[in-house]
Length: 162
Image (cartoon, rainbow, N blue to C red; front, top):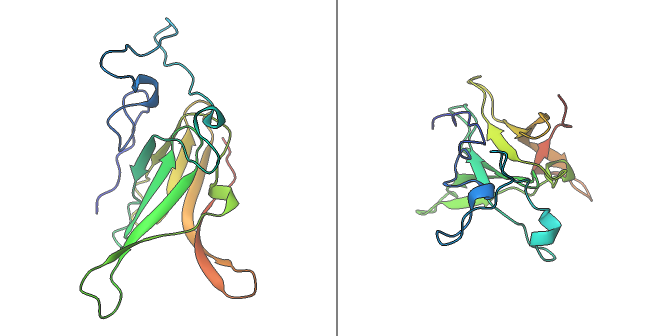
């Protein structure tokens, strides 16, 4: 698996075909502020109903050759998810296992988010960056204590900082 190349959100999201600010139909021109910069992303609450996660998403993988994992981030809310391929013992067909997310990987302040991979070959996490504020946090999968005992792997993120 190769590392996700760093992407400048203004060009195109790391894994997407269009940025949210230009996602208009061919018959409708994208709205513009007239200053050459994309319009701010609309609030997630304005676009999504209860329990719905608005898109679009950007996808990225960590540089570790041992990490069989793909991360996604909602470019408007910063919410991070992670999934990986697994093949249960005795099964011919594998499954996609997605991890629950800790509140630290949940929605953040509205912004323009992307995922950036480092070049550190042992890294299994990925940076969540907010292109509007410059804040960064590292997101990864960690065994977290479960209510009632035991642990469960969950997506967690460090506190955002500059």
